[in-house]
Length: 416
Image 1 (tube, rainbow, N blue to C red):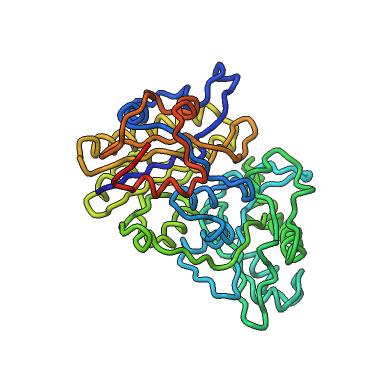
Image 2: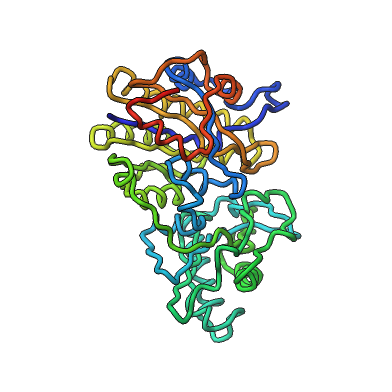
């Protein structure tokens, strides 16, 4: 059996006045997604348990069948896995965004989508001036065990290397807010809290002076671009211990994504990844390249997972028009070609669903169910003919908790 999973990140939304009371999924022209809905079944799944953050880290673990109560340790460790960073039993990873904060307002959680080259240079300066200097703003022993590690664009890491006598100062009760949930809001009440939070806050505060003087920021300011004013530290956690997808289901999979979080989850699940030229994790990503790569991968792998970040990015910017455009691009260049490739295969199934809802109105991830559609071998057709939030809740097909959905999707005797 062959399985295809397509994740249009954050595409679930609410009815919007600007769309005459429709959701972006309803307003977009999505013939391929609707064809899958008409050929198979439509329902809802909840990948965001109420006692966890409503973020991609938990939601994508759930989506792929991993119970976060058992396997989630934090967002940053998942992203560390994407870069091949191995965490020992006393180590910790912390997510590090370069952000734009002005007058205590989160203006831009991406620092104007700062380039990887610029981000790398800035983090190097932070290592030199905050962690490898004679007078660090935190305890020198702790500073010597920390390192800012570049990732992609604004998405980076802070790594703590500990040992039995120098355990991580951050624990599972260390709490912090995701910067993408603070857009246009005050950050005054959202600094890290709990064990080790004094270290994180001190580094966040000290980063302001270092970054303000950096030549890259000086040049960005002159060019009228937003500057990277601070690092925002969040999502800390220790090494996760996920069984591989092959160990759990006996299936060999592959991940196609431009986002380190999904790369990391894929790596921990034992999936290699396919890097697509021009895939950016933003609205300008190479949609067609992802679709083409997925079709080729079907010949080699049992399960092919394609993740597209663009709808989520549009939501964080509050741009319903851009979200609709991203959805139509995904439908045309990813879902359509893959549906054509598998719809006549008697041993193939396809699944389309986002990880979590992201509302254009609030520019935030949110808890709650998301619509899914499944078609292919052994999948009975229901009464739905469109793929959207409204049709999904009307069928009565519900997966709750969300991590039970994957077991059903790959079950040869699928029951709606």
